[in-house]
Image 1 (spheres, rainbow, N blue to C red):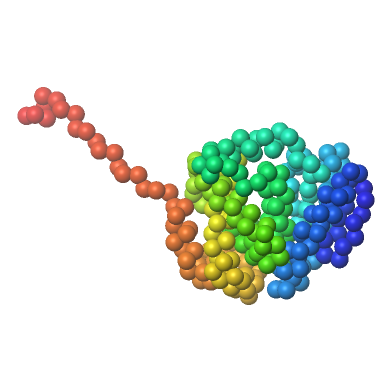
Image 2 (image 1 turned 90 degrees about the vertical axis):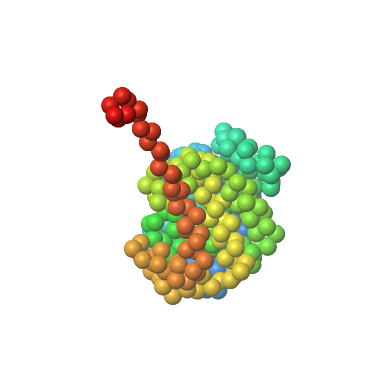
Length: 267
């Protein structure tokens, strides 16, 4: 393991992953430079690990980036030194229906996964700033907002890619499009991507129209509470009320009960 010191995004890399770790460290540090203008951020340690080093430190499946976040124990991002081929192929397979409609993917799947590490970094920032609520869809949406807000200012060329990927996956067809069910039910990969697409496109609208107004309001309301976060969001951004309503289950017309004709009811 090789250490890559940095005041905001220190990193550790497995043998053979140093160059990748340096590139990701630079990317996340650019996001940190933007976000810290709103409020200081504790250091977030990036672990770029091969499969052996990964399995020695976590039980999470190899290849799926994740955060381990605790203000007491520290903020960490776990990133694979390379994405397993089976995972990449599975993702391509799920994206195929949307790719056919768009006629092409916005880029390589691996680039999409690397780009989305900014979203994982935003989750760590949420914890540091008291913006995590444990309401899963709220946390995912706010992380997307933080990520895109920082990306637009720090790496505008990558922002365009992130929005393009968001539009693509928003074109998938979900089986369970309800926000209420998002926390209660495990979702398949296609549904998870569809939700991320919805969160990304809505966050992009807010970033492009009001820039940082939602963030400044959320920081004033922090720490966010599970019981009141919906009211806080709508109070800060009234347009979200209509957006939330789009996820409500569609009411199905009641089936018409056909009366069975018998000699008795004919009189």
